[in-house]
Image (tube, rainbow, N blue to C red; front, side, top):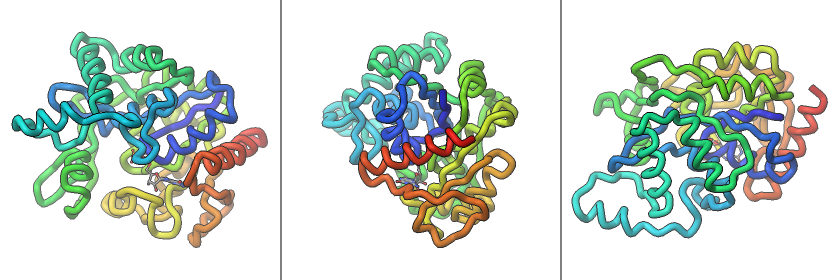
Length: 300
Ligand code: GDP
């Protein structure tokens, strides 16, 4: 068994390769839920949705969110009727959010809701939300503290941010299922996800760092030079006091990783790192990187 820590783009690209080269029942994924948000009364969990849709074979891999060939009739209509739906939600995607929201309103743990949804989609991998309680990444801007989705989707990342914060009513705790998965794993892979909005929220769940203590941990950098391959990781790293680079990523994970992987093109040098081609521009590239990383795991 291998456990992956995942957001909704970089690590799913690696998982796309892993599911082709590993026994799919041997894959566990601990997924960030700090970007979750209720919209139009339904529960959106962007990273859980992406990972689940990927394993179900229905993910839109052009955008890395939503369901391939989905329609947007309901989104267009509710927006026309005046709803403030700032995220474009496909019709089939919305069905998942409705079902999840309903189960959660009935008191079911997110872990169990995810299990049911994954079963319905025929997912064979073990997909686990990092925690069962609500935790939200917020950014401090001139507009005040706003949800990360408001910053990245509504404002298209075009406003200055001073700080990144996580808010919650009760401190998030890694679930028993997450701790069991890590305990049963030969290694833990921190995929090339956004360190600030995807990985640190997972690592901050109570019990998570201790659980990783006894395991070989391999982290893959999402940066090449001073820019991430995609997305807002650069500005978020700066706002959190880290250099926007592989060095900053390595610092974020200090004391946690045993092996750090950076891209062969990365001009920034992290000492003792392993170099692979990490640019997963298509499925074959994802498979090649998956092979490289499994070879590392075998040597651990
Ligand atoms: P989010 O939840 O949508 O932000 O997705 P993640 O946190 O999982 O991934 C976002 C990160 O993936 C970004 O910082 C990108 O730099 C990184 N990323 C995307 N594609 C690739 C890739 O092919 N290779 C590497 N190394 N990083 C990638």
